[in-house]
Structures are given as structure tokens and as C-alpha cells.
Length: 399
Ligand code: ATP
Ligand code: MG
Image (cartoon, rainbow, N blue to C red; front, side, top):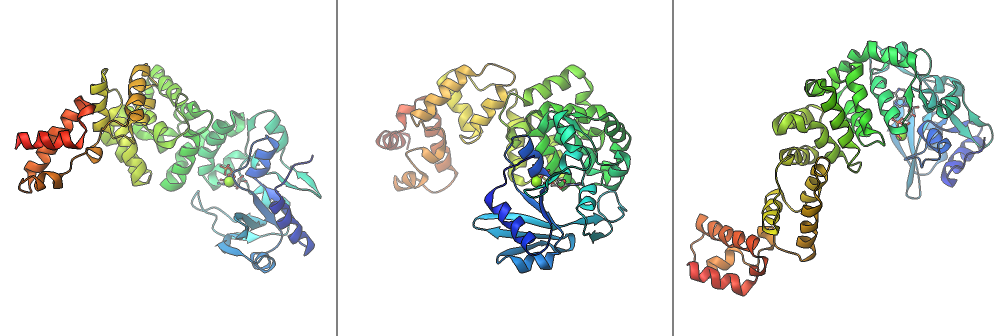
């Protein structure tokens, strides 16, 4: 089988080979290339030790030397080059207690999670597929390398990764892998919130975000999203949430908001904090959840008022969220007109400022803000009034 490697990947592999080492592209990049997808990144596995890799390339970064990973920089690209590795015994369901380097590609492939993620490729040897990864790709199946139960006991995150890859690729889960996954779902409690967050987001942003339902029927949700279990107990409701995810672009805040809206603002926020999301995401999702189900108005003036309350940056996302359960064509048309005409929906673009009012003789203080607000409310009603001279005249009259 021939796969096209990017020139820089070939260059790294050939450099390593020229010095007597083995080297292959491995994992996700091989899987994606076989599928005709564009890989996010290219990982290389090699028999060379990290120090030896560092010796062969001018620009490298010590990404994880104890795990065998050196990042090689070529031009503006970077590639992780990792020494063949055997993960030692896992004692806490998430970290190998030790990592040993190996001289055998087969040992490195055996430690990987799924058959479709355990293939290696270079131009000289072609595809190295020791666990039937190619067949599983063709038959659209997610299957563990080796004995599933054992692999999940080593690292429980793999349980969630199985569902994530199944959602990204639209594949079914092999029965033996699924059995193991159901019986060991509870072990996800040992896994850090950060790692769970990464997999959850990839699942939500995948082509099949509705596969999130698998978390609920396998017992995974009880551990990673316990707050949602109650709202998902009603099958029709769960299905409608799952379907709504497919109606918006694969953007994390949008999809998180659709998933979490049954919890309301406070509980959503708490859940996202627990999963260690960044503050920006937490705040965006909280606001989207808050506006879920809220009327945005029907007349241009009403829509301008909602947009002013929501914020211009978030309003399009609120429209996307509401578009999953009602027809927002009219509101969208009004919104487009507001932006096209550059109508004022924020104090920031009001053509009069607090300083102007002070220059007109007002004492600095809350009254300044109150008058600005009054003028702003008038401009929301009548966009033509956002004219500096008009507003100053108006202010003078009120003073
Ligand atoms: P993505 O497109 O999401 O990056 P990927 O296959 O590259 O997909 P990564 O999480 O980047 O996934 O991992 C790279 C490779 O490392 C995987 O293809 C797999 O071979 C191996 N791997 C990653 N995580 C695990 C794990 N928890 N257990 C075993 N092998 C793993
Ligand atoms: Mg990757």
C-alpha cells in the first residue's frame, strides 16, 4: 500500500534511516491518510533514543524526554519523534509506573489503544498493520489492541476515547470492546478532568456529536457527566438534545451550550469548572445557556434591545442555538440589517460620551451614566438618533 507522506516527514524518516535507525509515521496520521482525511499532525516512531534523535536535527525541543519524545522543528512545522516504547505496569488506571524504550516496532504498536491507531508506515516497508487495523477501518469498527478489559484497566481514558473515535469516524464499537467498556466505565473516575475534557470536546465537535448518547447508555456519563444523567433519563429529551448538536457548526461553546442547557446557568458553569474548562469558554457557554429559550423580539427595535443585552459578539451564536428549536429567519434578517447599517447596539458606539456630558456642565457621577443610558435607550428605539449633534442637543435640553 502506498501512502503519500509530506516531504518533511519523509525527510525525518530518511535522516533517521541513513543513520541506521528504523523510523515510521505512526498512529492518527496513518489512520487519517488511509481514510483520505487530512491529519492534524504527523507523529514519527523510531528505534533511535531521544539523545540520538536530538543529535541528528538542528532544531529540537525536549517535549517529553522520559517518555521518549523529541519535537523536531523543520521550517514552520513541528513533528513529534518518539522512541519505540513499552509502557510498564499501570498502577493507577492512568499512568504507566515506568516507561521502557525498545528496539522493536511491534512492541511500540502493542501499547497503543485501538487497532486503527496502531498502524505504522514508511515508504520502504509499506504499511505495518499487526492487529488488523486496516480491516477494522474498512469494516468501520473500533476495537482495542489486545484484550479490551486489560487495556482499559491500564488506562481508563481509553474507554472515553473509544466513544470519541466512534463519533469522529461514524464507526461501530466491536462487541468485546463494548462489553469491557460497560463493565469498566466506573474506572474513568481515576482519570484527570483535563484529559476527560479533551476527549469530550473532540466527541462534541465530531461529525457525529449525537453519539454522545452512547455515554449515557454505557454508564460512562455517570462518571464524566453525572449532572446530566437525570435530564437524559427521558429518551425523547435525550434524543432531541443529541439531534440539536448536529444542527450547529462544530464549535465547542455552541455544542456545550446545547448539551448543558437543561441544567441552567449555574449548574452548567459548575460542571464546566469541574472539567477545568478555561474561563472564556465557561463564560460564553453560561451566557448561551442563559439565552436559551428567551425571546429575542420581533420588531427591529426589540431585536436591537436584545442584541444590546446579549452583546454583538455573542448574538450570532445565540441565533445559532435558538435556530435548533425554532425558526429564527426573521430575527436573523433583522440582525443582518442592524450590522449592515452599522446601527448602534452598544454604549461603545453611541456618538456621545460621559466626557461630552461633563463638558456640557454635568458633575461627574452616577447621573452621567444614567443620562447616557437614557440617550442609548432612545437610539436603540430610533437608530437615526445616533448623531453627535442631535445627541448633544438632546442632552442640553435634558440638562
Ligand atoms: P487526533 O486526530 O485526535 O490527534 P490521534 O490518533 O493522533 O487522533 P492522539 O491522542 O493524538 O490521537 O494520540 C496519538 C496516538 O497515540 C494514537 O493514535 C494512539 O496510537 C496513541 N495513544 C494516544 N492516547 C493513548 C492512550 N490513552 N492509550 C494508548 N495509546 C494512546
Ligand atoms: Mg494526534
